[in-house]
Length: 400
Image (cartoon, rainbow, N blue to C red; front, side):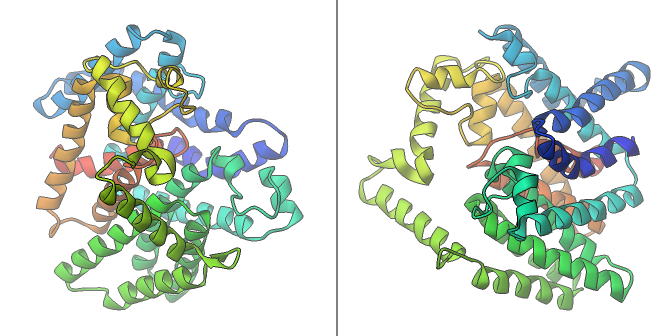
């Protein structure tokens, strides 16, 4: 099991090499998911089949069953089970395997994994920051662009979600460092990741990180510890927010102004001008709700949404909202069941927050902030395995 999570952690760096030799990075991202799919099915058949049928698993079982049915009844079945983006039903089984992995691994291994994520993402961020010829070679984009990992994650927004998870991991690595040398290393990594996360310019990620800072502050106040580390984390964020500029404007300030402007426009027009809200997401959401009304029970199946949006001359393959995506792909019953399952895990952890160790707390915060960022984003194979893995870590408390 350790080998599979290690493969996932180092996949971004391997994907960089794939970019150099002109092979789509999607293939290498699919590899750990496919291996996990086989491993997970084997584990269920050999050991875990007796534990599947339990009250606590009812929501996730309903989700899987209705999702499977929606794929069988989908118009384009190849897309539903495999997918042109390799994000069909088989990929979902791989995601659930990572959830199972997070549930089964011990805290020592999880701590090691979090530190490895921090180190790998820091190396990747350093490559992104330096605007040199090698950056252009590695990522197949002009050196004048700031979206240095588009080649590795297919889209800068996907990179943003990864950087959100990695930055939170760096906070854990810093706060749990055993020596002064480790603290310096992980504090530096955290600053680099903060800078890169802001530079990547995914607004939902920025908002989610602010939520993270708020939640981690509350937690540390409750626990009455690590005030010094918390102060350094805040200072890193404030400093990087102030100095991260592009084309003579501050990225954070520009994004805040943009969202205020969008919100004011919607309010002033009483929702009549919502189509352009969130860089065009308004019309995508509105059309998605219209499509959902046509097939509310089973949805359209994985990777089938694109063809429905094309009827409205909208060129997207996902609705940029994880809840709407789940409902359109798998139907309202499946989507509601999954949301209930995740909510039960979060609630159980929040009730036990005072007794929780740092591994559980940081995993919970990753899950919450990822979900917030996904309210204006998509679930993709580049980032979703990390989410399911940390959801599995959180589920330890749920299954006690």
